[in-house]
Amino acid sequence: MRNRSIPFGYHYQNGIMAVHPQESQTVQAVFMAYLSGEPLSKIAAHLTAKLVEYLPGCWHWDKARVKRILDNTKYIGNGEYPPIIKEKDFQLAHQKKESANTNRQSVDEDIKLFKGLVHCHHCGGPMVRRMDSRFENPVTWKCPRCGYFLPLPDEEFKQRVFLLQKKLADKPLLAEKEEDEIPVTSMEARRLTNEIYRKLDSGDFSEDELVNLALQCAAKNYEAITSARDITERLTATLLHAGPLSAFDRELFQRTVSKIHLTRKGEILLKLQNGVFIEEGDAP
Image (cartoon, rainbow, N blue to C red; front, side):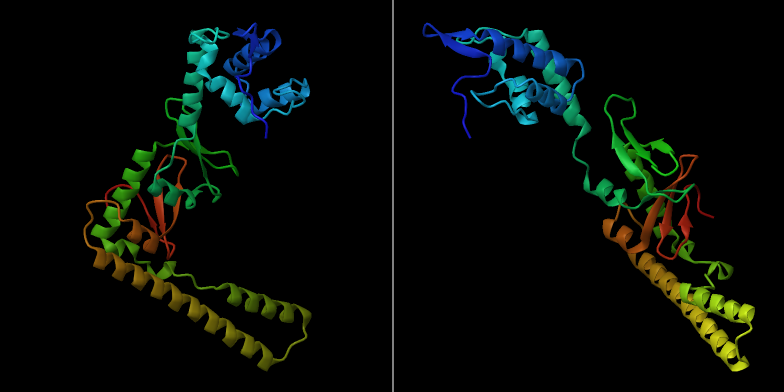
């Protein structure tokens, strides 16, 4: 790849560094476009379309080349290089880039853990985290399925999840399902039930065949009930072993929680691995 020996926008004139008439106009246009809100990719595409040469015979611009122009302090003048851009405009562009970088600030590990688990309590769809530093509350969780969104700062989110986890650790029996909440139909049991109905509708069946299908269906339902009870017993034992919490326990969270639900009222619910929801507020 060829590199320029001097910055774009300058050339030597009688042995002295001088402003290049055409290239300097491009530099000014880049700053003007960026300050007016044009993204780097669009500025690069526009320069490429106009066949503006970055090097002799080279007019393919990309975001990196545009960014190098915006980052180059030589354009405000520094002795050897005459100014092309006003210092005020250069500083404004720098501030705009810093703001854009803030929008892409790193997300801490706990929020990364939450991101794949957050769901809309209204429609059940997964929610995505959006960051925009232009707003008073820059972090928003949005459901693409139903459009619901909730402004929720990361630190507040983490604290509220911790309080829910602490509530559960303080009272592990909150993870217990009521007897009538235990699922009584597995997917396989539904399939067998549908098969029984199809045979009854068709009239093509024997009594022994129906009895056999009914017994299989009952066995699958029993397996589902036993599995649900096993999960609940494991959860309760894990929580009893954990004891009271003074800080968020990442490992305990991963061993007990399957989803985080956000409600239309702005509430946070933890859905445990056995399907029980832990709600905010005082524990009963």
